[in-house]
Image 1 (cartoon, rainbow over the protein chains, first blue to last red):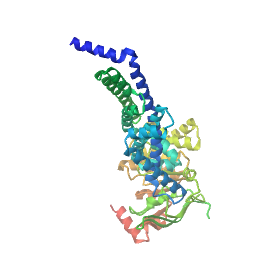
Image 2: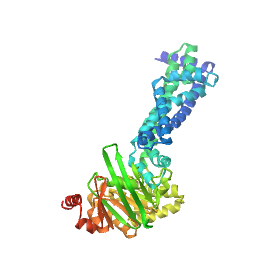
Image 3: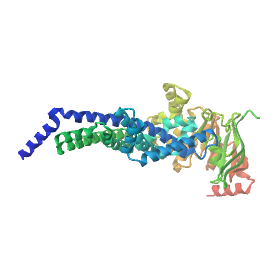
Image 4: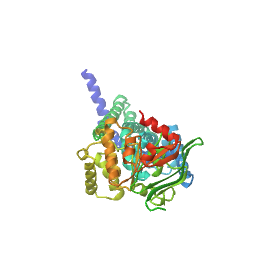
Length: 242
Length: 248
């Protein structure tokens, strides 16, 4: 038994202490969090815009008078649909490589490229989450806002969004967790994220157990921590109603 | 045109597809200070008519004039005019994520630029009138149906509207709560508020209405004082309807 712990200790020193290899994990964690955070913000921004366009079209497209506004909405809605279809229909690794090798071929700021790629990818999923939230709000809420004299956007802002956000929060949190873990493919485009950091250690030390399980544990801890945070937020939002 | 007319509809039609004619050439006038009650069997278009008045329902053809302005004109900013037309819904439609007080102050603050203290003072005074001052900090889910509807009425009144539209305000209520809501509406009528009320409460129509409009199949069949309509209906559809609602 003590022999086992001694090997473990030796492995640990080899993998993390020697040559300051822990820095690979630490820096990788930094990149992973950075990419996840900014991609998430970007995804929410894109998702919000796409969701508003799509739900506006779903709700009012048929009722609208023919004219410039209707034509514009139809075109924009069509663009959103193409975006959703393409992004959800192709693997995120491929999208990431397209961004890296084709779209931003002249740039070598790979973290920025990853943020854009993951942000655009996440936006498609967030858009559908938000849209389902907006559509789940009773039409009467919307009419009540309009009847008081609020415009379309103000009604969305003050009345529909706050309620929709509350109802989609669990699904949105799930999307964030998926995103965090999906960034582990960033190594494909020469980004040294958490997974890549562990993998470099594996390559340098020929140890598999220690680096991979450490990386897995760090992801797990991040997800558990984040899940806790969301359930606290959820409880607080629910409290405001009772 | 008579200055006293606040809302006038001109050949209002609403079609859903080819077959369904929800409104068929409806011409109506609402005068200032008048309480008009719209009755009729379900599916007669009375709710559609009411909702067309503030353009929650866009008419297929025809015009709606509010204070002399054709608000069906796409160039008109409808939001400005809606501020002067309060609306009360069958399903209350209070904002569930806000307290009663927030529900009442939201529109006056955001749309009229009223200061928070002034808006709250106004809201509390109005709440007091309907006996709900002590519920100001409750959330809608904590209120009874009757309380919700009274709050909904106050929410519309806080915008100081020229006219109030009621879309079956008591139809979703438990019977014992109908009275409290009707009382608020009666008080409002006494204060001289212009009201258009779609309702099945014939007692309210008899007692409070200045004029009763009977609709069927998307058209106005007849209109007159409550006396004329209830004691001496001209059209046989009116007679049939009144028989079925009054002789239960």
